[in-house]
Image (cartoon, rainbow, N blue to C red; front, side, top):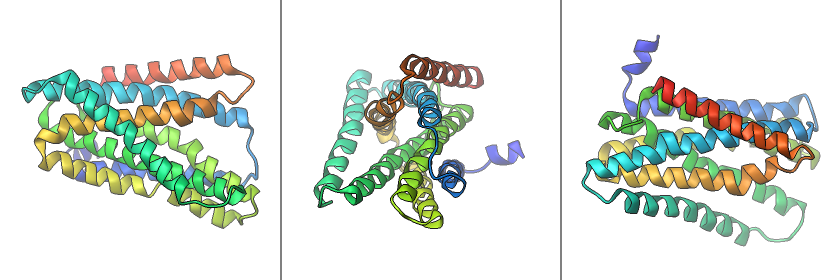
Length: 261
């Protein structure tokens, strides 16, 4: 089974990894079938762990390989990574502003639309990150292995679980049926397998874009962690515990990435 997976083409591997993260988002959204509310401390703990995982994945699976890739192409590593990294963050800033601008009326409906739109937009660079990670395996860069790409997808998947719940539960609380709240929460993750496939195809067809795409994905992921996941996870009376869980998430991802890589 493992050898069959390893021998698949990179885009197909990437798409399957995107399907995995989409499935985990759906599992998170599925909480609404059993509960109308979930203890915010439990969600905060999951978000804290995933924040650390995503920070480690951003560096070890994306930024570090971007530096190696730029150097192998004879480019200035720090300049290439800085450009890609900043544009990854700017992409999400502009996307958020665009969504906010086109949603009218400052009421509960607007808040829910912004919530769903924000998570959908953030799922796009996460999917691209998966695609870039799998596509770049072909080039044999330092730190880029099948294991590291899989661990990146697993890390993104873990943080997708509370994201799915973060959409479906507020929708249920706003009066949506369980089925409708679940479907909207689950479908918020459908962009990940699509964008992961696009990311892998881009990397395989435009070799010189690889360092920029890796850095772009890393910048976008770190932006999500800083702007969304960490503030949300710190919305708890147990701030020190949440911070420690973030540190543990980073260590777990780092150990797995380095040991399996």
